[in-house]
Structure formats: C-alpha cells, structure tokens
Image (cartoon, rainbow, N blue to C red; front, side):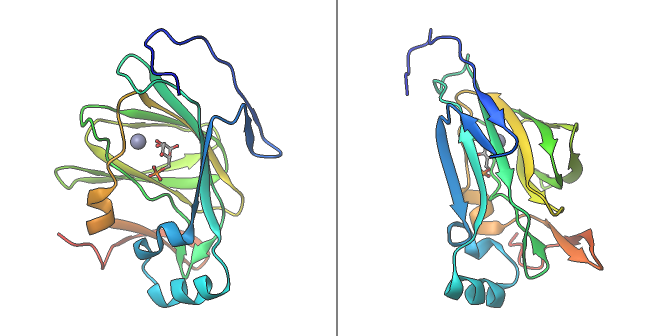
Length: 194
Ligand code: M6P
Ligand code: ZN
C-alpha cells in the first residue's frame, strides 16, 4: 500500500450479485477456525470443524494509507448461519487508537451491532438496509447476522485507527445474540471473563 500522505482519488464499485468489490483492495476472509474459541457451543464447533471450515465473513479493505488524515473504508459481509444457536458474527474489536470512531451503513440483510465500552457499558443496535450506525470512540463493535441472507455493510474510520482484538479474544463480549423460537434474543454471555 502507498504510505504517502498525498495519495490519489479512488473509486471502487460493489457488485450486489457477486458480493465483490472492484478493485478488490485487500480481501480478508475469516473462517470458523479463525474464531472458533469465540462461540458458546464448543461441542458444535468441534463437530463442524471435523467436516469443514465454513467462511463466516469476509471484507474488502480499500487500500488507504494508515495515517490520521485518511479515511479507511471497507465493504464487509457476514454470511447467514449459526453455530448451535449463536449467529455468525465478526470477531469484534476496539481500535488501537482509542479516540477513533467508526460509522457503518448497512446495504443489505438483517443483523445487530453489539457494542461495549471500555467502562463496560453495552449497547446493541439493529442493522438492516438503510441503517447508519455510529460507533463512538472507546466502544468495541461486533456485527451479528440474524437473517437468512448475507449482512452487507460499508464502514469508514480514521486511517490510523488500527484494530485491537486482544481484549475480546481474552474476555469475549458481555452480550451475545442467540436464536430462540426463530428470533434473535440478547443474552448475557455465560463465558464472559471479567
Ligand atoms: C468492518 C470494519 C473493519 C473490520 C471488519 C471485520 O468492516 O470494522 O475495520 O476489520 O468489519 O471485523 P473484525 O475486524 O472485528 O473481524
Ligand atoms: Zn472498527
């Protein structure tokens, strides 16, 4: 990626049929094995991984210099599915530079944005075509697909924000989204480590 501060104007186009961005920039694919420890039902995880390793989500990072004046942006899609009763979701992260926010515009599908502040507050917002979700600085964020088609969204954040996965990898998030009688419900995470 070009690291110079001037850079140049860019245009990319997302194809809603193939779910591909052109030019693709950097495509990151996360399979179940990349985040197996994050799901509640560990027996189900083992069972699934013995057969295959499903893609949970993928995202296209437009290649932007990772400096403060730039706006990193990406198109992400979380595929529909569940591990036991728990919906497919992103890993979730805080930003390395804590005072950086992020905005999400949902383009397709149904889901929830699960957020948790560094002080331990939680908030969950609905995501569906047309919602604009603002993640303030110091709030971890994870997207959960509660529907039966890909959840597709555009996200934009400060170029140098960075991703801090460590805390969520170690502790999990306080709230989880499970399917109950065909509907998404919010539950306390029994595996959350204080
Ligand atoms: C969104 C943005 C990206 C993020 C991606 C996947 O598109 O927030 O910065 O990388 O989702 O989420 P995660 O990094 O938690 O796996
Ligand atoms: Zn982020």
